[in-house]
Image (cartoon, rainbow, N blue to C red):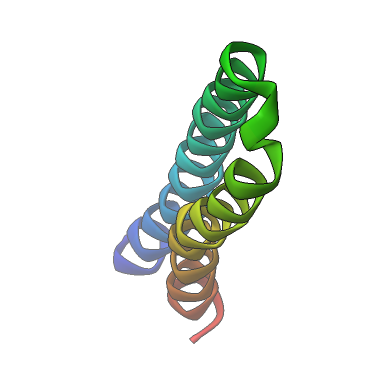
Length: 74
């Protein structure tokens, strides 16, 4: 019983991290495109900010994946 609960917890960690990352990437990309549509001359500046934001947004799913895999196979 306890082993199956640990496997379910690991699967939920991996799945929720992926869902959260996908939502974060979608929101950041939509705001980036909205900013370019409003002020095209700031595209270079916004692209740099976008890459920084993508790194921060993608850190959570990677950490969640690592903890989920440790939970599943550790």
